[in-house]
Image (cartoon, rainbow, N blue to C red; front, side, top):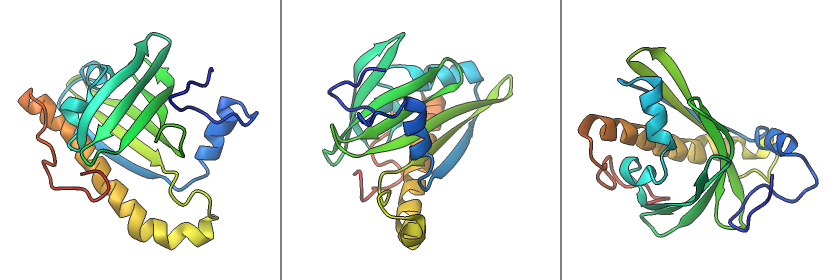
Length: 187
């Protein structure tokens, strides 16, 4: 994998698998939502360039920086003006992907998007985030701040994002910004 100037895995001398294993040592937050559409329809929603403009209630803009068969990255601008780069690491056609996200050349969170087929007309999307917040502290010291502050904030955020895809599927139009209320980190 080549590291791009827009962000990416750190130049640590570790392989991508080793760096991902390090991300997985962090605290994680997992949310899942079920949709009344097939797995392939859900994949087409989450895999198209710029999809967050339609489905993400805290997204001001979502510009594809690179979107081809071998490489995917985009820029996500939140409503509050904060800008993150998403660098996709593994793109599993029809199944999901994993990525790192953060400010350009800044600390990165690791995120896994996974689709599960429930039946022909129903599928679920799960998003698991391993945030960079508190990652420099050991788990014993970070437990309470993570559980009492970061986890609830990210859980609310993930629920809004997942529900945003449901809104787009149901209404066929972009979700209104801050549709389920503002988020103190992103609105």
